[in-house]
Amino acid sequence: MLKKKFLVSLVSMLIALSLIFSLTGCGDKSIEPQKPAVQGQTSTTQNEQTSPSEAAQIIKATGAYLGLGKAPTLSAKEVYDKVVVAKDSSYQVVSIRKAEDYAKGHIAGSINIPYGEFHKKENIAKLDKNKKIVVVCYTGHTASQVTMLLNQLGYDAYAMKFGMMGWTNDANVLNTKPFEKAAGYPVETTKNEAQATKIIPEVNNGSSNLEDIILAQTEKYLTSGKAPTISAEDVYNKVVVGKDAGYFILSVRKPDDYAKGHVTGSVNIPYAQIATEENLKKLPTDKKIVVICYTGHTASQVTMFLNQLGYDAYAMKFGMMGWTADKDVLNTTAFDKTAGYATTAGINP
Image (cartoon, rainbow, N blue to C red):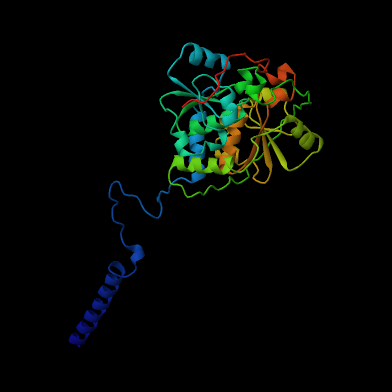
């Protein structure tokens, strides 16, 4: 009898031990104790790091440039004094006008790389990263677009304000209609808001580094055949009078100046704050975006940036200077007359 009780007790003990072993040994792996992490390692499921998107890289590069607070332009007088008179070798002047217009007359010593060819690496390679690059066009608009591109790529670049329009009064050399006067259109003071609910366009050109990404997106824009600007007259007729819902008006002026008066319906995102995801999400991808500044220069820089991201953007030519003659609303010096400086004909090597 005692022997039978002993055998029953022994069997019960063996069953209990078997159950304990199955729970703490090779049973349910979900309750296995975690191994201590090796210093420097991260979990591939929870902390896996991915490369920033191509759009994010363009936004970051643009934000870094705008964050410097650099002046976007140099006046014709500054260029004349430093480059022509003082022959300061720390400057490099590049004309982005058409080759035939450059040949008629240009700033002494400037090289020519036409605007539509600025996406090519062999042309970018002609510029010296150790110098201040002065970009010159007809009126300052396309030069400002190229200035944005060069600063994104790490160059120290500036657009010459008002372009050759501000340099020479030779109509044959200029070969474009210069600014004459403001149209005198009405402004409003209502503050218009846009919610950050839109989706930033996806950039996917297969490029692997920042320079390739930016140049590929710039090529898409420059070879699209799109005009870089829209006239104040077209904006007034289509948006203010025609109330065309296919347009979105973006003012990149300072908030205080925007408050004094702006184009009807325009939303304000200051120039220096455009390169943030929150502000970009306020912009529609299914409308033409008209960018407005003071004279057309910073609006043109923003226009390049937005088109690189895939938006359909245009700078309003001559900015608020072309819209209103109200000095309080404009709050900047409008173009008056050309400096009348000399030009050099022919082609530089």
